[in-house]
Image (cartoon, rainbow, N blue to C red; front, side, top):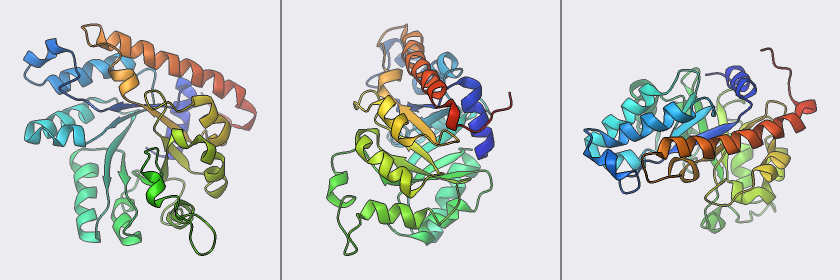
Length: 279
């Protein structure tokens, strides 16, 4: 999926919503546990109920790896089921020496068929490059995350006066292009989003932290939107666990619709800065 296709889907759906499929057997409705593949059954119902409201799904691979081979089968079935016009982000946070990253890239892009993968850039260019070798695929680099521990390293001041995360953004922005590279920028760091946008004005941001983690969608948009929208705002628990009962998919759709409606209004507000969209 290229940048134009992603943008067109955002405009067509009036949505820049990404739904995180962090599927936990301890949290899904109990009636599903008797099925052969409860994880896939849960995901399938969520996708059926919400695919018209979002432009991306983001399965966090840890929630599948924890269940061993069966969890990985559920992950593969889930990715295969997601409609072709919706971006699939493997939230795997990989990053290792070149040969290892090459195998990670092959796994997630060739076997699982994901459109994008989250990557930790700590080991530098040669650990990221293998993911960039795939045409039509995206590398989503951890830029400024929403967890409290981000203060430990990302906010450290360097000798030149800039912060470490700023150096990461400036350096990794040159690894690829705005057609194949995004950045994870946490919504709970909304006070920094305008600053980050000034450093990487044309890239897409994957923004977790809206919803259960308390980030403000309006603040994210006001500080981060660009002429291609440039935002994929993720909500996971706030949508998929909207109900513990048999109406879980319906309630998930209601929660997703609330965010989509807000996004539609935001896109209307920002229409003057957005690139033309041919329906």
